[in-house]
Every structure is written in structure tokens, then in C-alpha cells.
Amino acid sequence: MTKLYIHSTDPELAARMKPGVYEKIVARRNEISQFIEGALADTGEITLEIGCGHGHFLVSYGKDNSTEECVGIDVNRGRIFKGRRKIERAGLKNVHFMECDSMEFLALLPNRIKIRNTWVLYPDPWPKKRHLKNRIIQGAFLEALACKTKKGGQLYIRSDYEPYIDWSQELIDQSDKWTSGENLIWPEDISTVFQELTNNRHFSLTAELNPIEKAH
Ligand SMILES: C[S@@+](CC[C@H](N)C(=O)[O-])C[C@H]1O[C@@H](n2cnc3c(N)ncnc32)[C@H](O)[C@@H]1O
Image (tube, rainbow, N blue to C red):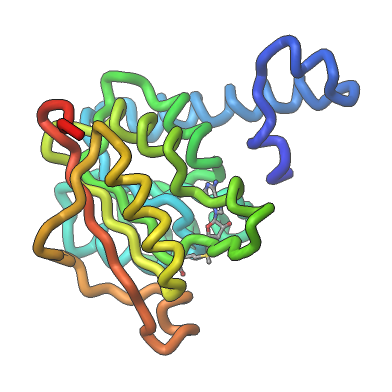
């Protein structure tokens, strides 16, 4: 299922897909759009977590910040299912979990909804060179996220794998849209499952959306 997300719906690519795959992608995207239009019908601003896993962070964050509409996305259906159970048990109305890929979500998010802050916590490190393209943080991702983020919006990235933070830092430095935080301020001290699995080993990075284009 995960593979579907990385395929484009570009008709030329679709022509090369196995029969039925293109239709599945379109159906899946319609489902995501319907979810957004339903759950976020009256919402103009969201807090976003990408790769939310079982939702530990966002459920806790949503409880502490009940006036914010929070959306967690992950490509792993089982994890989203568990996250939704947590929301139900906690009776939270301001937290939503969606099975969705990061780039797909940004493409489908309507312009009427702006992203306040984005959290990317313990993203899969993909350490091998040939797998770098699978990392969530990419130049195109930073561009797409910037287009949907409100002025002054922040991006928070945390990982136990330092090269991932270096990689993200480099991409942020190259970006016209983001400036990395000079003095790191990490506003929410909420641990995640992977943070606990790594005995709280972490390297963090924050970036702010530029009000104007950065001069290089
Ligand atoms: C290492 S886990 C971390 C989960 C959680 N943030 C934590 O710290 O416990 C990384 C998560 O990112 C999800 N993921 C990977 N690529 C993604 C993508 N392109 N879009 C959304 N989620 C993605 C994976 O399915 C996985 O649940």
C-alpha cells in the first residue's frame, strides 16, 4: 500500500503502471480529500506532525493545546489505526490522524488551510546512499511545506541519527524559504516511542518560514 503514495498520478506515468494501480491512487487521494473536507471543514489553521507513528506525541500535544487543530499523518495504516484509538479513548476532538504520505498531504491540503507548525520526529534515517531519496526531508518537501505554511510558521525536526540533522540543516541552508533557528527553542518536551527506544538520544533542528526570500 505504501508504494502507491510515491507514484505520481501523471497520466504518462499512469500509462506505465500495472492495470488498476492508477485507479487505486486516484481513489485513495479522493478518500484523503474527503477526510480533509470532513474533519477540517471549519479549520483555517493546523499543527502538523509528519510520520506520527502511533500518535504518542500528538495526542499529548493536542491535550495541552486544545485550541489548536492537530493533524498527524503516517504512511503506516496500523500505526494510524492505533493513533485513532488513542484519540477516542482520550475523547479528543482537536486531533486527527490520517494515513497519508507527506508530499501527497501537502499537495492535497486546500489553500484555505494553513500550517502553523510542523513536527518531524525521529524520521526513518535511511542511512544508505541509494536510499537517501526516501527521506522525508528533501528540497522539494521544504518547498511544498513552505507554500502551505503561514507566516512565522516553524519546522521542528528531531532524530537520534546526527547525519539526518546535518542533511536537513544543509537543505534548509540552501532553501530560500526557511531559516534555521539560531538559538534552538524546543517548545514541547514530549517524548515519542522512538525517542524512548533510543534512550532519549536526540539531535534537534528548528527552522522558521522566511517572511521574505533569503539572500545567498
Ligand atoms: C521511525 S518512525 C517514528 C515514529 C514517531 N514519530 C516516533 O518518534 O515514535 C518514522 C515514521 O515515519 C513514517 N513515514 C515514513 N515516510 C513517511 C512519509 N513519506 N510520509 C508520512 N509518514 C512517513 C513511518 O511509517 C514511521 O511510522
